[in-house]
Amino acid sequence: MLDYLLQRGLLSVVTLAVISLVVFTGVRLIPGDPARVLAGTDADEAGLDEIREKYGLNDPIPVQYLRWVGLALRGDLGESIRTREPVARTVAMKLPITLELACLSLLVALALALPAGVFAALRRNTVWDVLANGVSLCGLSVPNFWLGIMLILLLSVRLGWLPASGFVPLLEDPLGNLRRMLMPAFVLGTGLAAVLMRQTRNSMLEVLSADYIRTAYSKGLRQRAVVLRHAIRNGLIPVVTVLGLQMGALMSGAVVTEQIFVVPGFGRLIVEAVFTRDYPLVQGVVLITASAYVLVNFLVDLSYSLLNPRIRIRGTARGA
Amino acid sequence: MGPEGAAGGWLRRGWRRARRRPASVAGALVVLGFVTLALGAPWIARTDPLQTDWSRIRKAPSWAHPLGTDDLGRDGLARVVWGTRISMQAGVFSILFAMAVGVPVGLSAGYYRGALDQVVMRLTDAWLAFPFLVLAIGLVTILGPSLVNATLAIGLGATPTFIRLTRGLVLAAQEEDYVQAARALGGGDLRLMARHILPNIASALLVQATVSIPTAIIGEAVLSFLGLGVQPPAPSWGTMLNAAQQFLESAPWMAWWPGLAIFSLTLAFNLAGDGLRDALDPRDY
Image (cartoon, rainbow over all chains, first blue to last red):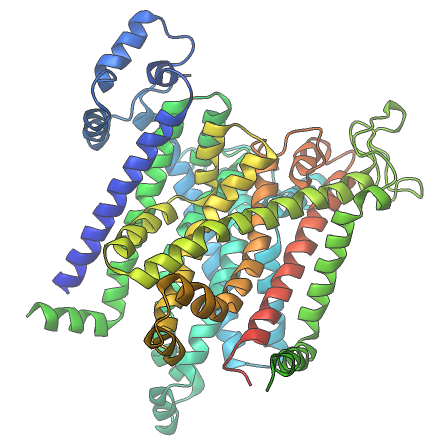
């Protein structure tokens, strides 16, 4: 187990190092003086000198890189050109909003995908199975930003049931917050639900044909008990892995969804940063997003090893 | 059996399987329809998609304008038809780019293994950590927004998938007897890769390309919707949806058609891709 964790941890560190190198190089690829790029066009000579000194822009590139990584590790990702606020603080303010949206959409996705996937597997090759597959295929094919626009058209413009946009902090007005987050969470959740439903169905089909399930049936257990006690636990292991891999898609989806529903989260921040050419903010957001993805997948690896005893035992045996 | 006989057998087998999946055949036909629209846009859409007319701003669908007009009085049908060309271009060329980079890199990594393989795998790990849109946004920030840059960004986003898939397929193919036999006969590395391994993994790569194209089409629409891809007044489905957002109450048709076009095309590609996967699956004889 320890060997496995160390191996995965080491791989994650190497990946993070490569990511930081890519992000660092990316900003250096922007044409023009890097000090001007990082300080903005409004900055005066004193501001430029300050940036040059802070990042050691006159030093050799490898030294600059190490200095930048050192600052980033201490949470210093520079200052936003537009607001002059530290990037880390700006991100910390926006991140909880996107995390709330991501958690709600995850709930929507799981609530739709797991029952549908299990049901489709249990009713294999019936109308229900075909229907579930059809809906999942449509979910995969529908662009979420169009779905968002259509929902606004129906639920806000035509029926007036839900507010089309805007945001109220969760702690200020929980009900108002939920009313405004419902549509974005549904839009973001459907794409994920489609992927998870397919995966749940496939892995449940595999599990349901296993010997131990036949044994459980032959012991006289009812289908409900077999599915709930034996099949789901094993059937969901691959779903957890897919869930980790889908985090990137969830982040991409959040960028667009927040744009449509005017949710002032992390995704909207990055688009605004691009349009205002706020390079330090773009750099910080890209670095944090990619690092979060690596971290989430490391945690998924951990949970995978906890859910699947074979990995744990194999790891322990090798470690012993 | 001669090569013609083998090809005939393959086609017959493919057709037999295709008949079992009418939805996939329908998907392939819809894709073909969109290809025709993209290629024949100048002849199918007789109106100029860029021509504004202040006398027919935001007109509902009618005989004269079956898909209505937009906020600048441009014909909706002409813009959707021309938008097909942009979407197809972005979808197909980005995946061709991803294959042109990903397949040779994956082939070399899987064939030579060792340090090269390790470096390539760590690079793809890092590459995959950038969510597609975040990577695209980063690239567009550096390169500037345009169709070419959006296509490049989408292609770069899809490249690691092709590297990993090709590498995995090569690792499996190398253990096969026909590769061992070709090596024993003294075939060089390049010959082995190009003449023996590549043709045998091509079908799996083709399937991956088919299922990647719809993602790329949505990617272009998203980037254009955000203002990071095709720039107005060019008729991209994404930019059309962006404009439609402001007129949902007064002109909802502006949002219906471009979205429906993206949905139909991606659904058709997904259906066709599923069918192709089954048709080319060697386990299913």
